[in-house]
Length: 187
Image (cartoon, rainbow, N blue to C red; front, side, top):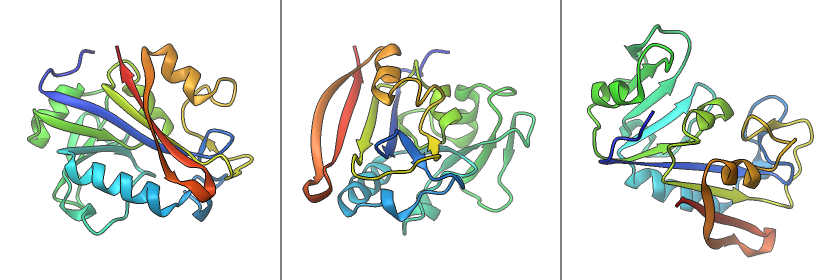
């Protein structure tokens, strides 16, 4: 798979000290919700032309219903309208390419924001232009859901690096809790 030249692909996740994006029940706990990170995430999604996520990932923000999205699922053979959201399209990567899904969603240029979960992030490892890895080192989620396949055997940073991404800009989002975001860029 090669990225559509007119479409920039960006990933977004916040992880605990263990590299987890959710607790053991596969839900994002309050322990991973920080005002600075949530503002960074909301601003990024407001700029995105397409949001891509699995059935358990969503942003639950005031602008969420206005966002065009692809929901990755095995419940359809390729592409199908989401009966509960007119701005969403159900997408099974085994039955339709990302380019086909984008075209059907009406988005062929701009930015696609990939927001998880682990298997959805993995679909794009070799396609990200930038991956924004937010880290909350004081948050502990033992037994939680890892952000990527291969965590905790490898760190999220090792996985991003193995896919050709390099840490670039780092920004502190919440100094009191040591929450930061690093932009991992290709090339």
